[in-house]
Amino acid sequence: MIKIFNYLEDLDCFVVHPDYKIIAHELGLTEWHETVWIGRYFTLDNDYGEHWFDNWQLRESLEEKAKKLKLDSAELLTIDADRFKNDADGPCHNNLERTRFWKDVLSSLHLSYDTIFAEARKINLERKELDSANYIPDLEERIKNIQNGSR
Image 1 (cartoon, rainbow, N blue to C red):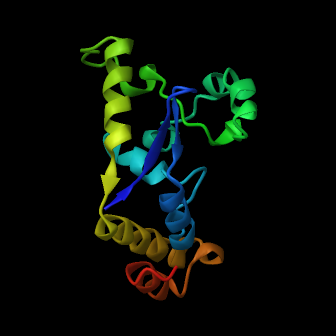
Image 2: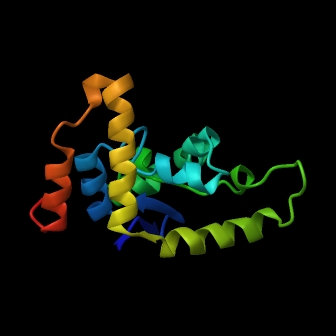
């Protein structure tokens, strides 16, 4: 299992855990950021999930604090509670409750290597057919290197 996010209490936001970030790049799991594919699972398994951290106005408000901590504000992932609701049959919770829940979920989120590798294989197969420029021909070798701890 690998941790996906680190919570930054001083900024009240998340960044992608450095170990997962390295693996995501190695396996081609990076789109706008390394957790786009995970967001799709959290949002009824559709492309709305790729936007789960599209909340630039919240990042901009943290820019000065981030600079003081030597962080790039573009890498800050803030929770916008409104992104985790729909008005079709709810919401059932208020913004504070949703924010608290998602902080807990993301702070504790770990994924198995099997899940990560399966997603990398799936995406790579799609790329072979639709996006050959980003296809990774040595993906299985990269996976073996990660499994052996020699990435």
